[in-house]
Length: 393
Image (tube, rainbow, N blue to C red):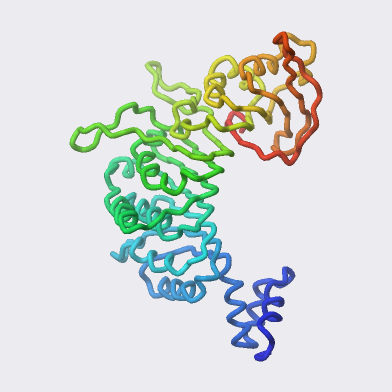
């Protein structure tokens, strides 16, 4: 086996029927095969811990030896309280070896300080200019919001990088999943400001943007730093956004003179609300009664920020509606078509499989301004822009 051509070894290693256990056993046969197998095993780049222990160092060294083969990296971040080593300092040489990274998933359950977390984000977007997919998961704490200016290391890195002619990655797909598990159950705008300031260099190019949260964003219109100076409220912005996926809390319990009451989420004021004018396809996942009610209130204003919207795909999770709008002047589809002058198609999808189209209606506008509907062709493989309202859950 020591003398098998590299092409044959590569063919063996890349067989889909081989398991990692098979490859590990084969690796014992030949040093050359061992190298090829190692490339296969490390290709997923699954790394669960970066710290300062000997075991962590061995893991980093193992990945470093095969770093050029890693294209997909899933990184769980943890701080080690028993060691004083900086996690960004520890992780930087490791990331530097992954020269061919295509996708990174970054998971942190708030064990890292906010400053270190932002520093790592800056490292990723500046050290991998060919990175195309970035997913971030973070549990936000009140301590994060208490230190909104903890961006010094990250901002310094970005400034130095760009000053020396460096470039940031140009992402095609960006996913941001945020959670807050302690009261007040609102995402602080200072935290979102920090994220936007660091990440916008890489996310502005994204064609697909996913934003999920179990908490609403706090409604501060004005923010101030420790010296009382006003801070600019930032929003995500894009050059070529095509797909928008939102999963937001439908309700949160807010203070009220009589105690607490549920408050309906209005995503009009969220940081992602800017630059939606190029969106042409939208999927709404909501209860039918909520969707119809929203048509004349909340949803109307939100759809108004999408002047090029052509396809509306509805996936309901409860309620019964007569889906045939023909000859029914009070049908909600007619109201939607009237409020959205560019609308060309309304589709209903299965409530579980958003790409399974059950019914499709073409919007026909006559010369005298009358709106009619005719059955359209179902397009189950339609590329979609997604808005998921957790009324559906």
